[in-house]
Image (cartoon, rainbow, N blue to C red; front, top):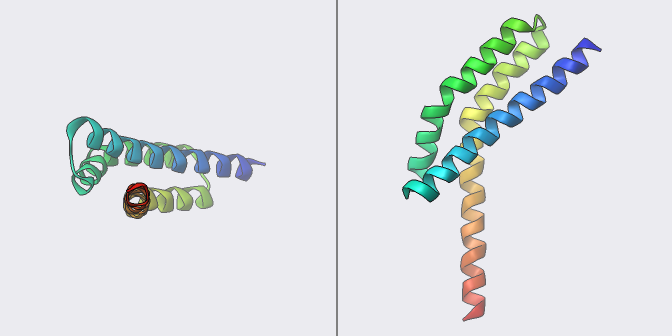
Length: 105
């Protein structure tokens, strides 16, 4: 049972970290007129500290090797893989938008 609770907490933390990172990049693009790369770099730079602090706090509170390993993995994924996936999905969205505009014309 404790490992199941740890797994649920781990999924919640990983999801929260990813949402915060992507949301910060979207707001930076919309409100500050940044390019996608600038917004992602700024988001990773500014959100890395809270993400790592959350990871360290949860890792110190949980004394489970599986949860701590999952935290380290989710932190790396949040800071490295999520921006790459965001870039691909943004390109896909832009391509779909261009196709829709071309279809109307």
